[in-house]
Length: 125
Image (cartoon, rainbow, N blue to C red; front, side, top):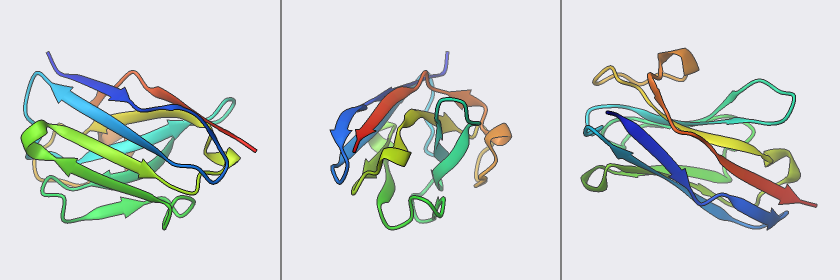
């Protein structure tokens, strides 16, 4: 059974930092792209960042570019999202997702077949 578990969320002041982790179990994702998405209250889920299976290619939403960094450690089956200079607009539930198709990178949430339960990030002004 594939399982993704996020951790690292919390309450932080504007300008602060958080590091989210997503631990995968049930199978290895070393051949699969991973992504982070977020959903704020009353808004649709949106793409935040994605990383290729090797970690060599990354994509970011314009709203987080230069502030967030996605990375992965395949030996630990874990993906990370380092979030710096956080803004109140970053407040949302953050979800980790895995693309179950090997050797593809996609930014479309519909292409990600496995999702975590989400972790809350709240940024106070």
